[in-house]
Length: 214
Image 1 (cartoon, rainbow, N blue to C red):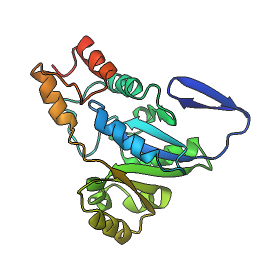
Image 2: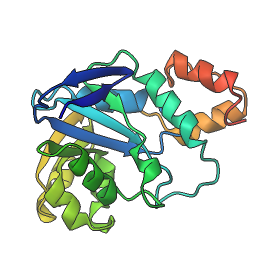
Image 3: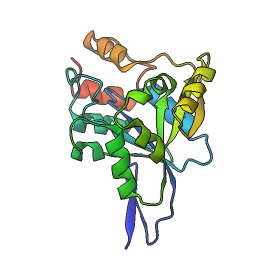
């Protein structure tokens, strides 16, 4: 059967889909910012990575829904932020999965959608330290290679030690120090301050036009 792969807003048809290394990058993306884009760019420097799939969470089990922007709007902001990026796609699959969004369920759905693909999971180095507390963390490690984004100046040895301790297959993604957070951005928007240098210009315009985070 013919299948299609969504890359940005383009549909690429193929009679026989070639297995790929697919990296899941999930998060609230509330809103998506230039720090997220930097993580994706850094991950794509790994020549084994074929595509990074950005997956906005319906709702993270670790976060409150308070202040969480509508899912469709977060999806659109992700599409705008990564429009023109090669080897990236934005997926809404978590909006059809049970609530709240557990990474193990999302990886399972990706595995069923793209049989034969090698799966990876892109997370920040700080998130590695709590990975053992995630729902069915052992199954996550079995299903996906962990791509740990470690910033310059962070304790890379500690991150690698933890990944080894939990038995993860992993790659280290080296990143420059980028001090950007969605929480700070939301506060700036609430106060009517500029977010230049923090958000993609198209995302900032979308937020202003739609009066988000006010």
